[in-house]
Length: 300
Length: 314
Image (cartoon, rainbow over all chains, first blue to last red; front, side, top):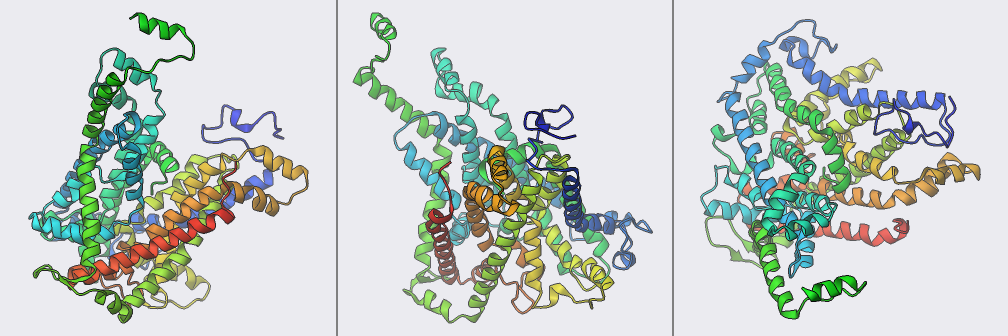
């Protein structure tokens, strides 16, 4: 099969949508080499994760002696015992994490979509200046704000509550998501707004009934990125939450090192697997949005 | 009404609305815009006020209990005499300047292999991208402690080649290396960005170059690199900024201490210790601003050199 310039392989129906024109000079042998290289790299990268999953169902004695990924002996008790190994059950930590994540997603979608609509579709005095300011905060390293924010939240009596983790999300402080939505809204035809205005819609009605429903892909991207970053977040909860009852899953996991006996690896790995599972799940469900989002804004 | 029809039939003569009407509508539009931005405006207060407050605190002695006391540049001069701070700066610099180029090179390399219309691209991309979502999680840093631990799989693998076992994570000479490897492991997110950029390069450039007898290396040097340079630039800035602020990896790897022997004491980790373990809020603010300046300098340097290596023509 010699691919010529006139028949790019991407046009063939068995190719997926992501594949595209094969580069010039590709031979069967070079394709094979490429697959080999990619498989080896992929295997090396996946191995630690597979080892984690496999270790989570091995008895402690076997974790470091039995190197095969398929456990010689199964020990599901790691999960049941790990669940209750710390001061509180992991059901508490998971509930805490889920509450924070869900509220953060709502906050980001609400506040960032409002701001994005303002920047993308409305004209007002100072828009360019504010937009530049917004882009500037995207580059601003968060640690510069850390200490005064901590002092402020302490003075407000918000230490050891979820407010410091949640309120900023309702105030559109995450410029990346605003930027992502602005980019998306700008791609929608201006005629939509004009038609809505002629039909008597004010800006709020236009936003709510016309623009929001069309922005679903951008919202999905925002929601998934918010989910992943908030679920993983360690620093904020470490700083603001001191009562173990309020701990999120990452803080709880960290306690396994504090109480590091010689025998708890299996439980720790089991809970690690559970903490990573939602991210992997969201990743599989939302890969399309993630890849698009990262390609348009460079979000990490 | 007649005015409207008149302007509508005259091509190119879109009559501007009467000035008064325009001003009234402008004011209403302003109001709507500001209302939409209201949460953002309040949020900006949470950004701008702390921004200048921390600049002020950097010149004070403040422990959260007593009022801040102005001490001028003392925090900054103290930083130069603080060996732990200099160590943390060294750790952060080594980490950044080793792991950022390596992970970008890995990202570019794999993206170039993936870009050539390969079958199963979504699968490969998923496998390479997933780690970058997990790399900052506590679970994975914990995992790293055991993968590189004395009994870990890395030693087991090296054992096949007769390499004696080392506890990589508790040896000051190697602990940071394991975190650099963790960083490289997360090359997937710049890779996705590179992949998007590579697709913008027309295939015919390569074909024309090949016809002219350009070698693979030459085609990479003269086509891929220049045309991809804006994206390399973007990834470089992003990675530098993120890498200078590394925290969780150092914190979890050695349980908040930055050990062994401060070999994983990242700058931000030391800032955290100063601010929230010792409550030297003034000193920590001075550290924060110093890092801001360092990041700004490196970003500016990258921007400044950009005109020599970033190509915006096409």
